[in-house]
Image (tube, rainbow, N blue to C red; front, top):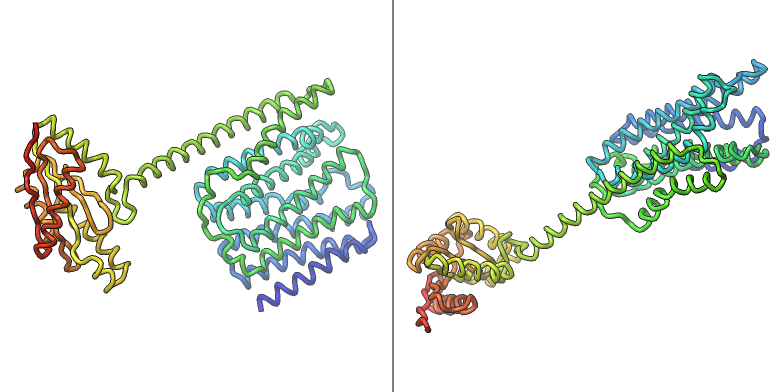
Length: 480
């Protein structure tokens, strides 16, 4: 049933958008068509809420309210024009037109808060883009509207409200587009509807700056852009993907894509470009606004750089940690062992305390893997290392040497003390498994490789003797 609603809406939307171009400009039919499209879109959104039951229905209720109000402004303006010679500016129609901005912006804000949590990088990027566009809006839209002496205080407020509403809507749009997570069809339709409204408003602003009155066809095309915005919003609400649109998504990666970098670069150059343009005309009339805009963008860029540097430090630390850590067990790996053992030996040389090294090999590990599977083998390695660490002292250093082999440095432990510790570890081995171990006491003359090799020789002695036991390496004579 719901899929039929989507197909029905797409058919009506196509007829409405393309059929509008054939309606005579300025006719009563044109007004009925525009108002009908807006109210139809609001009704379809409500039907989508009831059929699809999205996770964030308040967003769509607000969107429906904003669209219905905006479309209603067309009817109010038409009625006022027929009952009054000059309804003046502002009028009740402007209230209806402006209702779109707070309703849709609030709905989007709630949606964004539901989708994303503490996505600071997207917030900074969106604020940077909005700041640059706000500077353009101030110079070309807000300031001219605020300085028109013919419309009075209320007229100034309403005139400024339109570009301010566009800037707020732009901020919400950019923030939504920069959010992370899957961009499903409902997400894309929502963004497309917002782009329609912003494109239409921006085009009207450019036309007003050019003091150009669009012809009938140009007027209909511009009006059709807003109708498309109404209907695309409705399509987003009735699409099945609207159910997952408000699902919490992972924050966008801190790194900046090339496309976004280009956009941010262009945005950061808006202020200097405006200042250069006014300087070439010998009319620098917006120096304060441009200065504030440039300072704001500069601070936002510094904030973004700080985020990138922080992320780089975290990634560098993670890479450094991964380089010396075994991914499966979380123990230091062989690379870490090759660094730690010489350091431990040097400390033992300075203090004169004994040092013992043990090499451990889980018995019949290949047979265990073949019988129970590799996931069970991984589980054995993880559970064994966790159990062994409970039997170790805080000064002991256990590392994974490779495969099912582990190596252990026991500072301040004689071979007898080391044997007792390793035997406790052997008895603690989980899942009914055992290990063989070879231990070797440092003679203060051999290198770390030689000490480890003696422990390895002792390990093979234990394995050849029947496994599940500990063998002690013969002490090498001290050479002078």
